[in-house]
Image 1 (cartoon, rainbow, N blue to C red):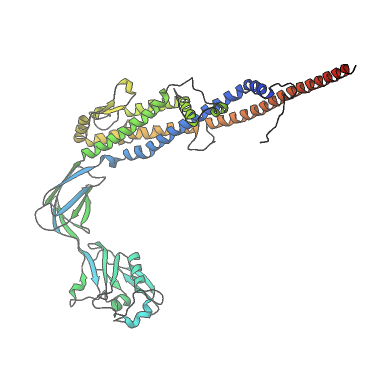
Image 2 (spheres, rainbow, N blue to C red):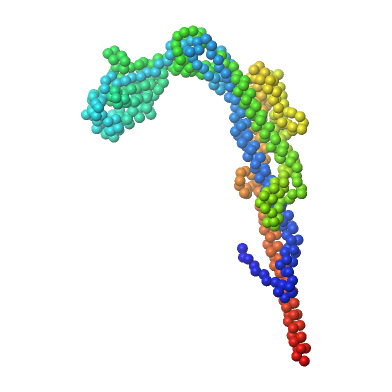
Length: 506
């Protein structure tokens, strides 16, 4: 920006600068008012965006997680009878149930070890296998070799790959884990799964080995009765559940959503009983109600906030006369009420309150709304805030947990939209409100977008630029007029001096 140096009032002694400044104050009023209007719109946009951000976080995280059925499927598990034989825990799909479990035999994992030491003390498991042939006890290795474990083929380039490389391939590509013990000079193999899960068909007791590298060099896959300790056959668990004897490949399995782990065979049966974890479900509901009340309060506070009409946005000149603290205090008051009686917030508030008090087809005539389970709006002056009668809520969860779950998480059907739970209704309708907020004010910290308020701000920027240019022209004209006056006065003074000089010479 070019600074213009103006020297005036030399002849007249007239305060041109001060006079022009006062004249321009009146001329700047429309420009300043437009700037204040623009500032108000920017505050409105920022306030909309803050609400949009908070509502989005509530919808996409808190509400999304809460309306999942798993929130209401929390179970407590109790074991009586033979408490040492089994352990159990509820999963997300657990139902209230009773299981009688008697462990006949535990599942066993297949394993196998080298029959004899496969290498000497000089063997290096990190060097290429071919280079270590002299240090192998049985056989030699050269070139590329292939072998199979449980039907899965592995190929090894012994000129480049070491024993450690071979074991890494086995661990990665097969359903068996292997490791080399440098002290015993043996390789141990263990199936990744217990039970009859080995062989090409995945239904055999022992790990199957094919290929000379395994059988001759690693000394596995050719065990016989003379070395019974080198192999452990896999076996399925045998268990009696509610009187029915069945077989399981693992000691851990799921029945009716209950994860059961067999720990000890023999003895009397264990009885596993499950029921809804009322305390945990109540904590989840209470957390949701707090989150809902917080969101509702945000909307109510903004749409009912009193406007301080005595505090308008500060102009540039007004800010220059104040400290930063004074500016901050003033603008806090000036921002109040920028969204008072806003139609978008009013609509969102009505929708929230309608959804939260809706009657849901939960399959129960007694428990079909939040009010029916002890959650209701307070006094009229609380503007829809929800309060919880914990005794009533606890009783509803214990009496009919499925109905309580349906009130929050139910899904609507084409034939019966009233099956939609409170959580699903809120989730859907909040999206409508968020769309309206985004169209009105945009998202995030983007200065300009295609939202209505951003376009309005952009239009005001253009108008202010035109007005500012016009103010510059007006100011220049004032100075030209006063400059012309100075010139005329200077000429008049000069003529007067000449006349006096002529009279004095006579």
